[in-house]
Image 1 (tube, rainbow, N blue to C red):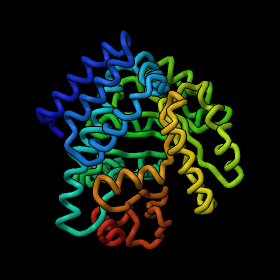
Image 2 (cartoon, rainbow, N blue to C red; image 1 turned 90 degrees about the horizontal axis):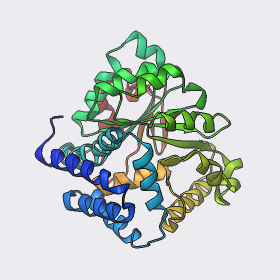
Image 3 (tube, rainbow, N blue to C red; image 1 turned 90 degrees about the vertical axis):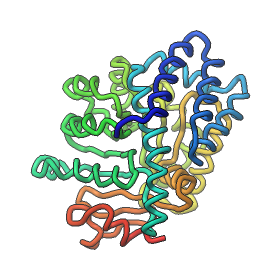
Image 4 (spheres, rainbow, N blue to C red; image 1 turned 180 degrees about the vertical axis):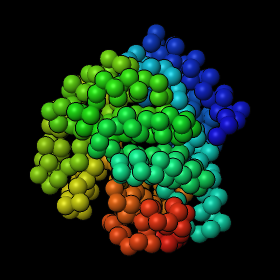
Length: 336
């Protein structure tokens, strides 16, 4: 995507503001939010920045510490590239295209796509995932959540090539090898999320030392409910200094548990007591999608190519991304 004049102005303004945040994080952060609202012309961004303006009226907000931590510990080129790709390419230009196509063709398009990477497919058919991303971008999708179980350095060329997209790469701590870190340093449009287990602290420290943007995540079960709701889980990940903490419900979780976790996540964000952004992957993705296009659409593809929505899996061949183009699948599965 060739940057338009607005995109160029957004990027240059963010770069100038980042320099001043280290000297006066409170004032510069408020200026950055004001700047975001000035350039916002989409429903989601306007709503987000207005909420942020209200929240930052609290002079004791931990989000000031959050911003200062990010600006001082992360490569500024990563902050700018990932931020512009997510906030502008995805949630402004991409969202505008999503609404246009939905209105013309009558099916829902997700603002973000979840992909469990099939390593055999990645190696045997090197054009498959690039083609899938191009199909997504043609529909306005510029944010991708990638789940990789093998050597993550194999996916980096794909991420680097699609430089207009924002990627979140979900990994285990043991996958953070020297070769992966060396490759990752030249990739500016990705945030790595580390699973919250015993390997997390060391992995996060390696990412922090390399001045990379990172998060932590956990796929929670019914057994994890109490430790999440009483704040124990969140306190356990704070020493790793992640930018985001993601919670993802296991298939076994009851709707009641998922609702309680979602309410807890919202309360934590509203209280502004922790210097990170806590998110419920499923519920927050659906909320953003509802704001962007007045619909409810969460789409992902399993390692075997099967479609997964917020309503569950569809294992039929007609919904399998290995056999059919993305638009055809969405037309069948996500009619308005």
